[in-house]
Length: 100
Image (cartoon, rainbow, N blue to C red):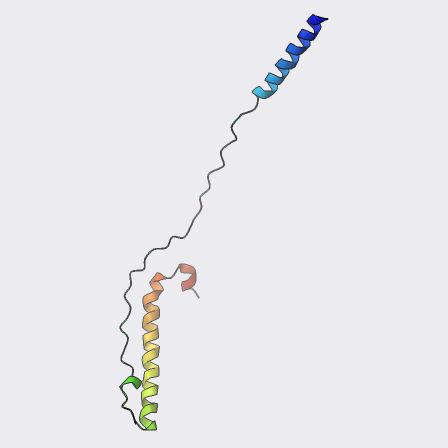
């Protein structure tokens, strides 16, 4: 009877060791994936010089016609200055913002 118990214990121990032998103790490493991350880079552009606007040069007490002429001239100056600013900043924008 003892021999049967001893044989059963040996068989159970052998089965347990056999079951553990097929497993790897370390998990498999995760697969390598390529991830594209945008990286900020400094923009090397210079700001355009701010023009002397026409209204700033008006003397105090100018009549309405001079003021209106200066305001019309300043509007064109501001449009040109805004276009210069946009042209200076365009190389600094990511591609998806350039399209819009």
